[in-house]
Image (cartoon, rainbow, N blue to C red; front, side, top):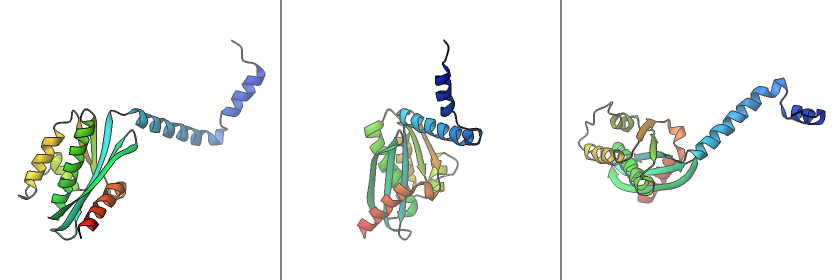
Length: 174
């Protein structure tokens, strides 16, 4: 098949100039990643956060669940007088319960800004606190029900939705 000169000129207009090629490549890659996320409906991403005002003090937790890059569920709860670490585990427990009810067959990628909880869930650090151990055991049991569960630490700036929900829960409890 032969391409006419007119079509060749039209095609040449679509190809970016040398100086714009890297920006074009970057944009194309970014678009492909976004489309892949949308297609990757087998995995949900869960962001959780818990905290207390005082340690112990009035506490709350929040979570946000994403599927294919879109927010599909969120929640927050006031927990009463708890430590920060108890609130972190209660928040992840609430999120995993919700996720298991709605998306039990899917893979779970969980993110939180509590280094302690993440390292304990990954078996890197021991659970020394007697008031946290029962919560850890419950969360571990729920996590083990998923076909795939992975938990990772993120910086607070990457966990803003869950953080806001946790703060709203603590505000409700005052």
